[in-house]
Length: 101
Image 1 (cartoon, rainbow, N blue to C red):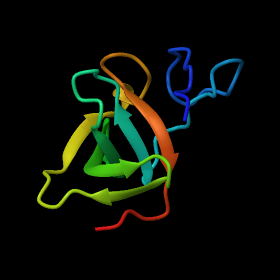
Image 2: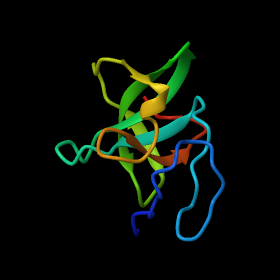
Image 3: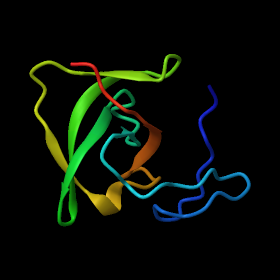
């Protein structure tokens, strides 16, 4: 699967060529860390607390579009403004109904 070409605008903007747009962050969304040092870091948003999203680390199968929580992995908090493209941000991957445990 080809990596989408995001424009760098903040989250919550509409698609435009070639950028597919970014949704507002919501619980149940899967985001991938954009830091090239951790290319396989995927998180699912579990909730919000003011300016931060609560997230759980998961493994992600892009072909099957499914994820599974990583046993004994520590939940994390991420500033909502980091849920955007860029080297210090995150890439939106998918919205899922459930993550296997």
